Image 1 (cartoon, one colour):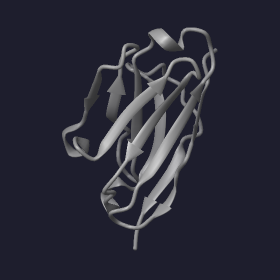
Image 2: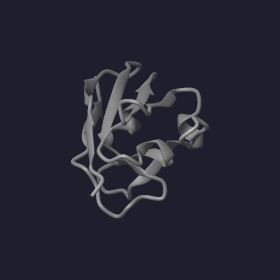
Image 3: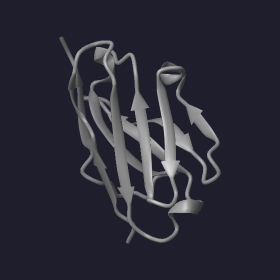
Length: 114
């Protein structure tokens, strides 16, 4: 079973940056469309960015210009560089395939607060 292990979250002030990483087990990583999702308290999980195996990216409108998704197929890892963070970016961030596979890793908490 493919597993997802997210890391890199933390507490940051508004306007700050964080870089999230997600290690993915399994040999099929390079062909997967991968995504970063987030779930804020009291809200549904949402997809914020995705990247194809060849590197084509898409973003939710509110993240365009602030977030950058990337991947390293040799390391089975997907990244999310987040800049100009806002309090509304506070959430638990998860990676998964797109569409998701129905089970999730532990996620990584991002808190944006002064």
